[in-house]
Image 1 (cartoon, rainbow, N blue to C red):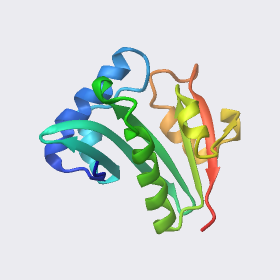
Image 2: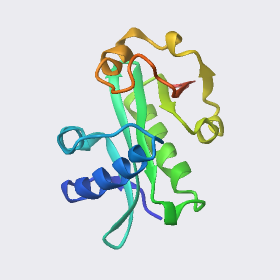
Image 3: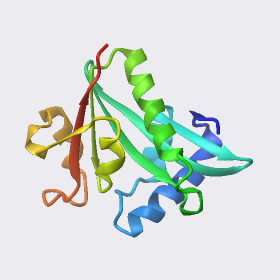
Length: 152
């Protein structure tokens, strides 16, 4: 299974996949415009023309990035796709020289496999909160915050 950078043609399927889980309150929704604007952050895996999974590595600052919008099609779960997508983000962060990764998730166990540590959201750098203000769940966020320090 090949993990690669997203293409423009992937964005409609990414939008559908992410918002499918957002409707089930399992992740935050993303607009088409947001996905197009940030598609260079994204990795995907496909089977033929079908998108099986996606994730984004969003850089906030010289030493800080977020792994976000991790989604794997329900009929493709339990195949290691989520693990491979997270690894792709971690490898890119390391290649870029980013020392700290974080995520906000409803599925912390996947990230704990990579030694992400659960933290109180208030421990996240202030730069993160600029995004939170736009979130429909702000200020009542119920996601779990995790952080990982890379050895670059």
